Amino acid sequence: MAEQPAAPAHTHEKREHWSGQTAFILAAIGSAVGLGNIWRFPGQAYEHGGGAFMIPYLIALVTAGIPILFLEHAIGHRFRGSAPLAMKRVHKHAEGVGWLHVAICFVIGLYYTAIIAWALSYFFFSFNLSYADDPAGFFTGDYLQLGEAGTFSMSFVPQVIIPLVAVWLITIVILALGLHTGVERLNIIGIPVLVATFLVIVVRALFLDGAGDGIEALFTPDFAALSDPQVWIAAYGQIFFSLSLAYGIMITYASYRRRRSNLTAPGLVVAFGNSSFELLAGIGVFATLGFLASQQGVGVGELDGIAGPFLSFVTFPATIAEMPGGAFFGALFFASLVLAGLTSLVSVLQVVSSALQDKLNLKPRTAALLVGGVSAVLSIIGFGTTTGLYLLDTVDQWSNQLGIVAGAITMIAAAVWIGRRGHELERHLAAVSTLRPGKAWLWLVSAVALLLIYMFVEKAVSLAIDGYGGYPTWYVVVFGWGTVLFLALVACLMPLARWRRDIVHFHPWPTREQLNLPADVGERHTEDYDPRSPS
Amino acid sequence: MSTSAVVLLAVSIALVWGGLAVSIIVLARRPENDHMPPGGEDTVVPDEV
Image 1 (cartoon, one colour):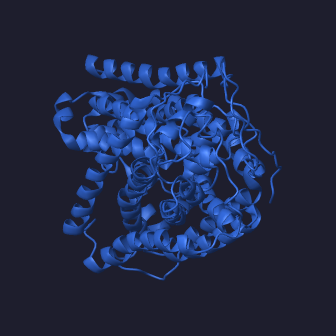
Image 2 (image 1 turned 180 degrees about the vertical axis):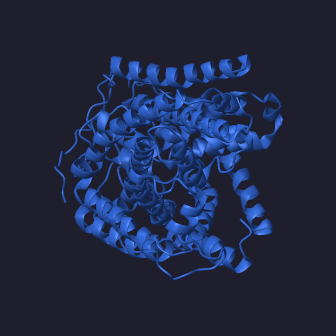
Image 3 (image 1 turned 60 degrees about the horizontal axis):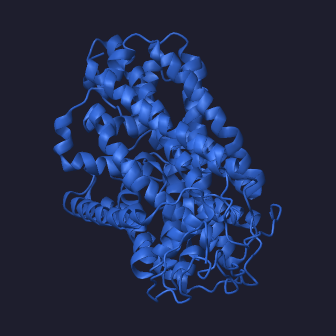
């Protein structure tokens, strides 16, 4: 066997690291497991074929979720930087793709915090069941003091702002403590606690009257639904949004792994861990809905608000009000929401913080204060008012359904189609991991991009023609399309700013030579690569 | 619960939670690749806050 080529000098720059593989896995699961697992998956499954939804869901997990997760892990780990830096190293003109991810995370952080603040309020409301008498009226009236839809109010709601400020302070402290002391510790403690808490909730829910009817409603298959393309798109969308893909989070988190780290097997644990929690949440939510339906003497299908914020803040409180020991159960449920939201929120803001650290050569504490301070002010102005719910609904629709999908398409295009890094990334994964993804992985990644292009066009046309949520046109243009404009501006303008940190002296490891690839990225290669016997 | 719902529930649990269990076992048996190319040592830094 020939002696392996040595890595060049200047390969290793100082960078924060996870303390180990388990810490990374828990942090990645903490990012992926969020509010969407609890309130989006059950509703999506129920509305798209019930039990039959699991077929496209699992196919989507294997053919789209895991491949894109591997792609992000490979980009972040090989090119060792925040999303903009890693993408710039992928291709000299791809920095904007990373900034698109950063802008999406910035926007999502603004309203995600508001939802966690609501959950924090409801955690305390649970002790005396303040919401029990009229959950819907309490949420929109007493608590949010909801104003007129399609307007932008500057009338602030103190009971929303106080927890909102608290959530921002907690988040800023966690980010300012740095990766190891802040983000990692939050997840190492938070994820086991979250899983244990949710297990208690689900076990309790399974013993409620009518729980079986609820689970039956969720899992009764409608196989005819599988011939509906929208069901498949819903399944791919659920996997995509649930796994925190194309936010730049997995690029950022993978960049904090040590170079000599296994990537693919931990990636599988993250992907299946996320889906496992999602399934657990689905069982718990529908067991609870079954109980509520039985108490009201109606079918599960006749219940309103089985997805989204209304599931958590109206339907669940209605259920809690009816069950024995509701105060304890309610406190556990809303504590779970806070924990699931917080671990995801921190990952979203770490993307922004990490990018600013790289671009402006800031220390983590400075970046955390800058990101947290600016975000907190904007978040309070936008979502601490009587019209915060409408703004949240609108901004979420555009940033999620268009922004994130565009972030994924451009990432794949930059890395695989234009940057021609596909084989390099596949061999990188093979070189450091215990499981090799194989060439089929690259085909899957490209196929997913084509599907995402279809989803993007379909959604954009739908939003352009039909508008959204019955909001007036000016509102949709300003806050919906305005969000997209903001994302595009950040992606286009930020690459024009100068890097204040040395990013030139960087060499990926393993080298292209070690991966049996020609030094020139554009040069066609013919040599195979066997990670067990490198030439 | 109907038979079809029970079957779908059981299959979903087996595939998703089974997939997690298998992934963890695979990772625990072989946590790191023993055949990595030379190089790749990191400069370990404490939190730089």
